[in-house]
Image 1 (cartoon, rainbow, N blue to C red):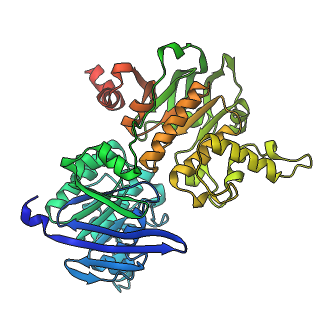
Image 2: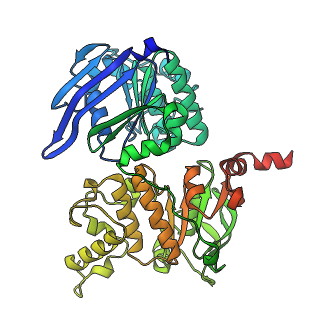
Image 3: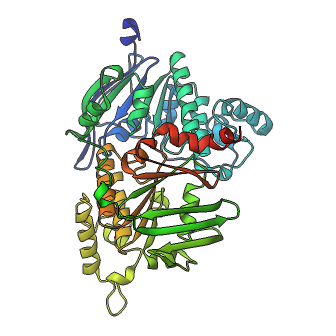
Length: 509
């Protein structure tokens, strides 16, 4: 970026403050966005990133401070006003109408203000197709409810691209995207930047920030910490600025040689579900963390849910410590000590409006029931406090709702819920999705500690650095089958992606 362009600010925020009652979410935050740059915004959960973006988008009003757009002071009174001023916001939480078409969702803002009596659906679909072809092969005539989560995320991005954007805010846009879809998005971002569009990119993934962004601004505890040129800093320096301390490593030490007993905890043989996966066999050994890799749609989650009998008509054998199990329902799986932590903790993993204590005991309320069959509040609280302490859960008290916790602490409550039934095997699906760097490091430490204490740990993750960093072995799933296994020095991103995407074609060739 030239010296002249460095002075060309499209957005300048000065001394912005915002409080929610006694909680000070922003404390005099400064932020500058140059024309045509991709600027990362980093910080732990609760650092103030979402509050700042919601103010820029007109969702919230600041208590004090100034926002200048193209040098002129502005007061954002609503998201509609922000859109008129050229600000587009793609939220992490998908907000589409499921029962109308993709095209109608994409052009909802335009059609609601057009004043036309009749809708030309064919024309709408043609315009939507022109935008979508840059992102993915999605039929604009389909109802949104028929799309996968990753496809819905791409529709959200397509909506923003229809606006005459000068500033585009992307909040964790790749959280539900495949590697290929993410790369397409990055190409689009770079193309938009060359056209003079400025992008604010929010992500916990350092590799995305360092591969695609020009600068990074760090917030911590609602305060501005620093802005750095990506080319002149390191991921370690950014992480240290985020957490206010040095994190020696995101990943704990792996299984040591003297810890490898060779004992098999879980043995899966010829697991098959007619439409989703076929002939899946693997072993989970004592003391290790086993990873499941593969492209989204490859069948990783489906295999694990099949083992736990959460969905599908499954055949094949599952043995625990050499004993063949007769599993028909998830309740049978829980009774045997095999539990599953969903990738969507807000939808399937937790009851957000219920207390921490009630969530922790939810898998087996009998353990905290009195002789009369009623919940014993003291026993429930004691269980939550004991497991929360083991996981270093940060909360005011175990009676507060889970919704009041940060993403990382919500995930700890979900793990505590699994531990409440003294599990022998835990399947964790995307265990660190949406949590900040400090919480990721803690969760990785917890998983290694559980493995060392004899609990079988299986991790599904779309983040290859996470699989490589935390797992002792990785099984790669492709099209519902185990395509191969990597371990030791062979556990590289290249080898995993080879097995996940092209191994079979290369072998046939």
